[in-house]
Image (cartoon, rainbow, N blue to C red; front, side, top):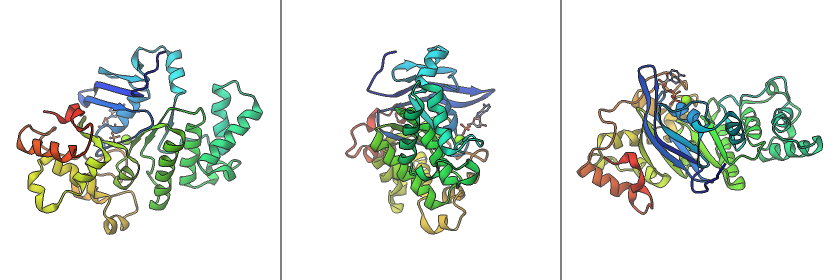
Length: 328
Ligand SMILES: Nc1ncnc2c1ncn2[C@@H]1O[C@H](COP(=O)(O)OP(=O)(O)O)[C@@H](O)[C@H]1O
Ligand SMILES: [Mg+2]
């Protein structure tokens, strides 16, 4: 299969419906090699569904998803298996085999997918565990380790086959703030050390701003904003006394972005609910269910405020005008 270096993932005009509900409504998103893309949005807005399309466990009703230049839906099972070896997935729970030690959880993947001999596999397991700072825990079982360590173990397993892309769905879900920050650092570290692209779904804004190179804000099945982290930072820090210059959608994105970043309010909580949730009426105390954020428009309208916003988000940024779905 041909490999294209420009983008590791290309999502084009992706539409997905479940029954009568259009969950993804024309998504365009491209991921570059080695970058960390954070996908944000309220509960139930389609983040996990989008991720499932990227790993080939769901296929689009319309549009296409390409990995390394090849359309996922056109691949044979064998090709899909080959492609899957090039990416790692970190599930919410870590999804470890409970009956296997941490080390064996990692070696299992290597035994299944490579012809390496046992000594080499042992060596590689040590390397992967060292990368996630878990070498001491190699012989422990999942039930014997903390939530944070389970995530690390899941990550070591996702790294087993030296993937080019890592997918994370809510990597800090259920972790205390300190552990969650350490997982963030690990994601940044691995992205840099190994040069892997990371696609991270999260509603934790502290994490999002910590790790992102670029960010995509999903709402009602569409990409409401897609840009560099700096552009999102500008919007988050947009002064209160000039809110009138923002259109409704960007005001809402600003609220969403500011939510979890506020100290005292978040510190009062158990780390799973958020200021943003209160502010916007989203139930993100759980990762599923709850209401989505509501606006009356889906995309910025053309005209003054959009022109203003274009300047706001394009200040110094190379590619802010390439975001198809920000355009009218
Ligand atoms: N397999 C499925 N069948 C039917 N509806 C689904 C399925 N998967 C997700 N949905 C619906 O699609 C919407 C988006 O879900 P999801 O992608 O899990 O949201 P998020 O990850 O952003 O919280 C929700 O309304 C959810 O109920
Ligand atoms: Mg989800």
